[in-house]
Image 1 (tube, rainbow, N blue to C red):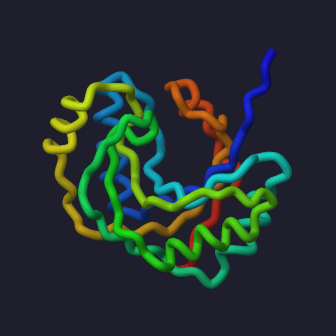
Image 2 (tube, rainbow, N blue to C red):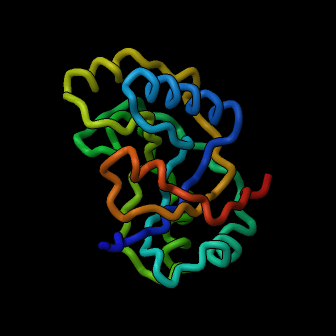
Length: 177
């Protein structure tokens, strides 16, 4: 039996009310398109799971940080399974520093590049359907607050529903308020 490479993905998760709003959209789209349900998040760093100690990484990186206010730029889509339909956020210096600090504290110095977005759907589908979906959704806010960082163990390649459903949170910390 082949062992699949695993990664640790560090997520920045939204606070209420954005968390519930995004979760509702994700759930509705998942039901409509027979797709996986997942927790709303912005991926801020990805590294190899081997020798990674996520609880220690978060304990070193998060003290003194404040919640992040991210400005939504609109909806987008791509051909990538994990970016089928997503909310794009404006680049932000503090968020980039979080990624850099996670990279520095990590045992594996990956070359992950931050492109802040929050996926709403993971599904292989045609471009026209994705465009129609992006045009049919509206966000009730221009900014969202993110206040929790989670480390998630997952397969290195996320290509199928089963890959998403195998995700497991292995560490979690709230940032100060």
